[in-house]
Amino acid sequence: MGLTVIVVLGLFLGTIIFLYPLFHARGWELEIHFSHEHGMAPLKSGSAVILGGSMEVGRVREVRVEREVTYSLDGQEEHTVFVVMAEVNKDVKLHGNCQITTDQPAIGGNGFVSILNVGTPDVPLTGPIQGLPPQSLAAAIGTLSRRLLSEGGLIDNLDQALDPSVEGSVLHKVLVSLDDLNAMTRELRAQMSPEEQEALFGKFHLILDDLNATTSALRNEMAADKDAALLAKVHIALDRLSQGLEEATAMLKEDRPLILDTLVSVRNAAQTVDRELLAALRTELDAANPSSLMAQLHLAMGRVNASLEDLNAMTSASERMIVLSKPTLEKTLGNFEEMSEQMRLASQEVLLNPSKLIWGPGRQREEHLLVFQAARNFAEAASQLDDAAGRLEAVLKTLPPDGQATAADSEELKSIHEAVRAAFQRFERAEEVLWDKLK
Image (cartoon, rainbow, N blue to C red; front, side, top):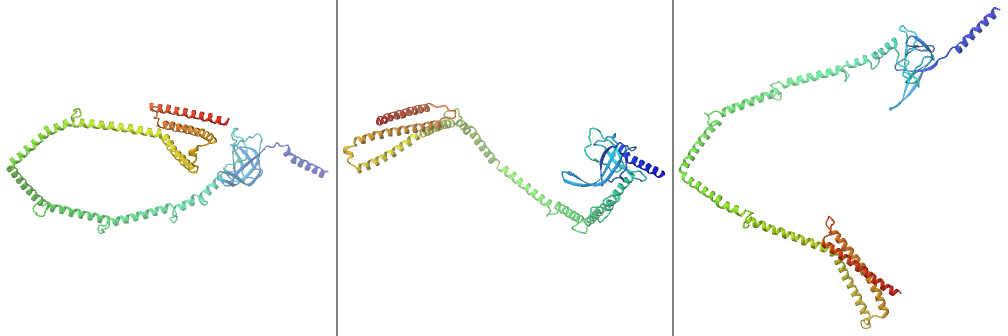
């Protein structure tokens, strides 16, 4: 009996334990990704999810490590992340801009997920939440330790900055600057040596020596008691100039009457030029006086201009006549050529049959000649039309830019009209002859 009671009680407790999760109200799943570079507090399945650091609102169901692929303008990149699957109460609503981190007690222990901010409803939650770096004291100490002691950290950078063997270090730059300063001071000391002629101070001494020699030479040249000095030579030159002026004054006193006569002659010549020559020249250059040279020159130039205008008109008329007569001249030359060809053919025909000069052509030949004459009339009428077209084209080429026809152009157009009419009359006569022969 006791064993039976114990077995039934065990089954009852097992059933309760098994069915409790089924009756317990389940929440909604939450997926959080934490970057392995920033780290994460120690979490495991069953770790608490805390809202605002005070209220437990869920539990961690799973913690795993995955490779996350991200895409950017530079291409595809892979990162290792901690994936935390948690179950949160249904009454806790998280949004896309929520802030979630991990934390752990200050004196050690398991970590927990801390929801710092649930976000705002205007940003919906569409994917995994990107977690923030851990905020525990141990994580802060670990981060500080990595920044201070890891490779490339503050201590490493400080060692490199104070290493004189590293070219870019501060201590190396200070030593190089001191070496440059020592070199500058050595060079300055060398330049300040008065014993070296190539030194700056030695060159300054040489300049002062040259200046001293120059002033000494100038002082010697300014000594009046030395015959070879410059000032003594200036005194001698001034004495000779004074002597020459005295001789010139004496010559002027002796030749004063001759000089006065010369000046009087020059004055008379100037008066003659002013009163006679300039007056005559002014008269000849007066354009208002018809008998003056300038008026006659103006008249001659006017006549020359008139002659040039007449010559220009003659050349324009000649050019117009040649342009207008060009088709006629070409036609005349063609007629001469055709006439010479016909005379050559006629002479050949007479040489072959001289009896045609005595008996003349027969009746059938005369009928053929009438037909040939009609055809010739057609050809001549067509030639007249071609000639008229050429004359009309020539008139159009000679029209002024404004397009207004002159009297000569009007006469030429009238003549072209008459020629066209005569050509059509010849067409009609030739047509009548041909119709008569065809009947």
